[in-house]
Every structure is written in C-alpha cells, then in structure tokens.
Length: 455
Image (cartoon, rainbow, N blue to C red):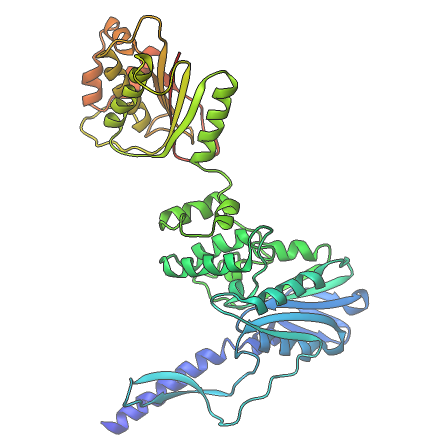
C-alpha cells in the first residue's frame, strides 16, 4: 500500500507539473512572439523593426517578471524603456517542483516549492524595470510604478510599438486612481470589495471605473502608438475586459453596472465617498433633488423628504395621500403651493389576476384615500408615482397619477376603484381615466419617484 500511494503521488505530481509548465509565462510569450531578423511576428501580425522608432514595455501582474524577461530575450536592445509592476517576491523565477510535504505540527498539504536551497537570481530584463508592489491591496509602490507607466506612454507616435504585459493581480498592481480619488480611497474600496462576496468580474467592473489605466484607459494613453497586449488569464471564461480590469480592452460594463453591483452586495454606503461620488454618477437622490429644484423655480415650497421609501405600494399610497390632506387642511409645516418629493421602491403582493405595477398601484391606493377625505374646495392636489426607467411592472406605463376626483370619475364610468385595487388591476382603471403616465424607455433606472403637489 505505501508503494502504491507513492506511485500515485508521482503520477499526480507529474500531471500537475505538466499542467503548470504548459502555462509558463516565458514559454507562452515565446510561443506567440517570434523574430526573424528585423521582422517580429505576433500571432498573425508582423512588424518591421525598421519602421519602429521605439519599443515600450509596460504592464502589471504576478507573471510580469518572466514575461518581461522573455520579451527582453527576444528584442533586447531594441526595447527603449519599460515598467512592469509585480507582486512582492515575484521578481525572481524559481525552479519549482510539485512536492508533497508532511507537516505533523500543522497540516498535510500539496505545495509548489523550489527544488534549490539557493535564492534564485532575478532574470535579465534589460530596459524593462520591474517594480515590486502590493497585492491584493494596492500600495504606494504600485501607485508610483503605475504613474511612471502613464508618463512613459505620453507623447508616443504611430511609429512607436507598445507591448502591454497583463496577468493575474494586475488590477491591484496598477493603481492609478482618477482625479479626486486617493490611494487610501482605493485601498479602502479594495478591502470592502474583497470581503463582500462579489466575484472577480464584478470587483473589476467597479475598480476599472475608478482608474486612469484600466477599462481601456492604458490603450488610450498610448495612442496613437501601436499596441500589442499579451494576456495570461486568471479569470473564468477569459473575459478580456475583466483580466487585470482590461487596461487595453474596450469596457463592456457601465457606471450603472458598477453602481448596481455595489447595491447588490449592500456596500454602497461602505465605500469611500470619493469613489461613490465618481462611480454613482446618477441616483435616486439626484433625480429627486432635480425635481425639487424645478418645483422651487416654479414657485412651490419644495423638499426631498426621503430616498428610502419602501413598503407595500397600497399602504404607501395611503400614507402619501395623508401628506396631501395635511397640507391642504393646514395641518403641516408645508403650506400651499407645496411640492414634496419621495424616492425609493415599493413592493406589491399579488392577490388578484389584474394588470399593473407598483407605481400604478400606489397611485390608485392614494386616489381611494383622497376620495375618503374630501379636500377644501379651493385646493388642487395630485399624487404622482413614476418608475424612472419608463416601465412599471409588466406594462407599457411608467406609473400613474391620482387626483382627488379619480374615484368619482371612475364611478361615472361604472368602474370600482376598490375592486380594481383588490385585483391588482390598476392599469386598466387608470388607463380608462387617462391617468396613466407613459414615457417609453428612458435609458436610465434610479428607482421610483413619488411627488405630492398641493396648491
């Protein structure tokens, strides 16, 4: 049995070793780049070195050292300058083997270990400077290296050729935050993201929107130079815009996607304010404050009451109608003309077989409440509930509007407002009265807005 176990260990070690050697960074570079005299072939592309003034090498990632060494071996003195950020301890390329180690005091584990007691020497990288930096949380060394990369890339021409070396860890190793976001902010953001449970694609969707190098920004800095990117993937499915946050790849994600991820994991309030202000370019509060500003311009006393409006739509509708009644009857600190704005998102418990959405149901419930307590004759009032994306439930309406006479007008058409509410059938009821709000797709989505107007 011991001999059989040892044989199995050798088989496993051999298989693992073969797998790891197959993705050796230096081998990978040499496989995809070849040189014949003054001709350099990169995949299916070829470059005539006689037409290239400068070759620049930049990048970041844990595999940066062997990739840079391989490129130096291929191009040597033709490389004018370069900076590649790597993780601390990754400036040398160890000779390794798969070995099973017995640790009686701790645990049994399978590890990749050097087969030499001598500390290996860093490989020759010529004009390419290797910078050790922090990972997974970025540090000042990484910031300095990233800033140097940005400097090297400035002022290039179409006769320059830039090689960008990207591998796992590049997001943290290339920290060059946008204006207004500090390294400390980036460190805090990274710490929150690493704890929240988001996957690497989600994490990088946020980080790239706070970076001057990632999300395609490095390629923008290098323009109009020719750019070749060599990528060693560490992301499931190899989405090029996610690996190291895609420094040279068009970004498929948006600021809205980044904001949605922060909301999904409940960390929007945990990230630094500078990051939140940069990533969250639009939110419910922004829409609400804009509504308030316009109402004030029109002569209304106006305020944003909350952006945390939640609860069952029909119950919220009844409460909002109470705001109308309080203002109209002089039992509020707001006097007519008044326009109060609330934001958030309500819910609907489906009880019937009707058609509608949460905003339409809120408006219908508000109308029923207004009908039960008539306002003074000299008062005009309305309750509006709107989905900012232009859709409300499985309908083509964005929401609805409730007037003090909505229910009375419905009765004149033989419509029963309470029966419609019980069946979750607000859409046909409001539609029959011309009280649906229809916008079509707005191209944005920052939850719902509810507006109370009394004059």
